Image (cartoon, rainbow, N blue to C red; front, side):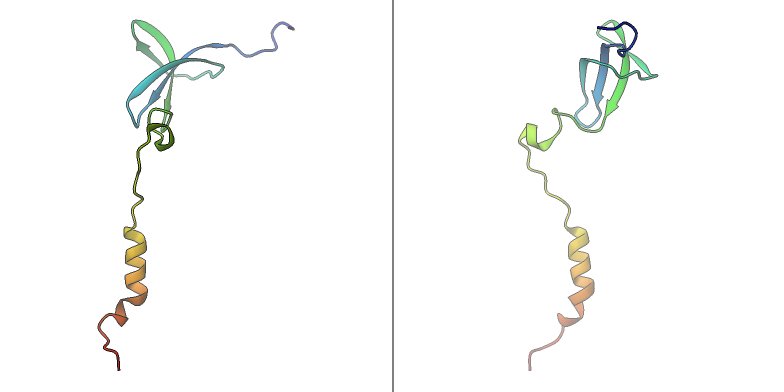
Length: 86
C-alpha cells in the first residue's frame, strides 16, 4: 500500500439515540465530538436508527399513524354521512 493516501481507521463510539444503545466500531469517520465510554475516550457519532432499533432487526411491528388519512377522508366525504338514501 502507498503511504499517506488512506484515511485514518480508528475506533468510534456510535450512539443509537432511539434505543439508547452504544456501539464501538472501527470506522474512518472523523467526528469533532468525543465521549468517554467504559473508561476510554472515543470520537462520538449519534445515530437515529441502527440494528438495535430498526423494526426489521428487532421484530417489532410499528403501526403508522392513520390519523391524517382518516381526517382527510372525513373532510372529503363527511358531508355524505348525514344524508339518507332516497
